[in-house]
Image (tube, rainbow, N blue to C red; front, side, top):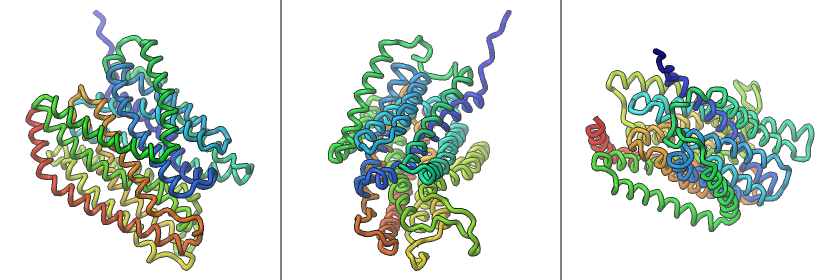
Amino acid sequence: MNSLPARPSQTRSFTTVFLIEMWERFGYYGMQALIVYYMVQRLRFDDDRANLVWGAAAALIYVAPAIGGWIGDKILGTRRTMLIGAVILAIGYALMVVPTESAWFLFCALGVIVVGNGLFKANAGNLVRKIYEGDDSRIDSAFTIYYLAVNLGAMISQLLTPWLKDYVNSHYGNELGWHVAFAVCSAGLVVGLFNYLAMRASMAHIGSAPDQQPASVGKLGAVLALGVAAIFVSAYILQHQAVARAFVYAAAIGVLGIFAYLIAIGRKEERAGLIAALVLTVQTVFYFIFYQQMSTSLNLFALRNVDWTFKLFGAELFTWSPAQFQALNPIWIFILSPILAWWYTWSGKRGRNMSIATKFAIGFVIIALGFFIYGAAGNYANADGKVSSWLMVWGYGAISLGELLVSGLGLAMIARYVPERMGGFMMGAYFVASGVSQYLGGVVATYASVPEDITEPLQTLPIYTNLFNKLGVAAIICTLIAIAVLPLMKKLSAEHSSHAQ
């Protein structure tokens, strides 16, 4: 009698998702490293417009998974939807290769990226949840390592694309370097797709119900048709700032409505977990306002007020392109993620696992420290108004550790507290909340916008440090709020755990 073939191990299934996520993030963060500079230096946007356009684009990119998660759960299947999203993302980055100064063309390319990310992001995270369903300590560890995939791809691309842009521009001119760098982002998605196809057998048993059925041509056609419409709607939103603002605020109301509806219709034993997820999602919204500064105000600060040459005891070590400083975030997370993942597993086995709510509170304290480091830059600047590259290293180090304790556990929070039948949709709702705060982060960054007639670093320095100090104070306030809700979170978690047993 023949026995059924053994299922692939959890580790192999997780590795498959880890790798395609890594390459997808390689493409996204390679583009993010350059996009604000591209708008300011190539398309001649002022700081306000560049920050707000990128804030709106980031919001759309994060809002879209709310729909993509539902499509994965109910229409096309989680695995299938993720792969379609990866293909569309490759097309979006490829469109940015076209050498044009048309803002509308850029907005359309970003619209394609919005649609692709919407189909990809929530479903990739939901596959990780399905691999480790029911094991709380391993879910925390798995999502921390999964977060490592995000930052491994980001680290490589954020070091590569700025260097490649500068190299090609200096050797070939004509602003060609921008588009060569975007081409590399598209190539990363292609590599990720080939890698997934080679390992697809490990995912055959993981997915939602539609994954187990033959693909419906009609449903696929309908999804793609709606995707094309969404591209042009996204481009229109990016072109009109008032529309973008209205859209984001409507999305915020929508997320609250979604949580209220699901809590109302949920079973009695599910409500404590849903309320806990809501509280932590609101805290995550606060976090992403800080996070968005990396690609906006901190990015422009690196351009105008940082000495790009790393020095040690007066000796010059190496010089970075200003956009490469964004890679400090994934470099730190690459270093810290395995340590935290080990700690979560170790403490979980000994019954000492710290609650997610407590980790959030600690995370905000550390984020505050990071922004106060940047705020102190004015005290350490040289006579030209430039600060040492090492200040960026330590500021990013603090913010990155805080990120791991807040955003790094956001997906694990959804996986732990939200019922499986709502998994994909709630992953999407979490990303909508993140998108709202990405836009708000762009709005906050405009408070450090430098007028076009100010070019001297000594004049721009106080503009940036004033904002960074205020953000440090805001992070302290977030810490106090997180501490204040700890008793409520302890009660909700205990109630949720009692019903889950």
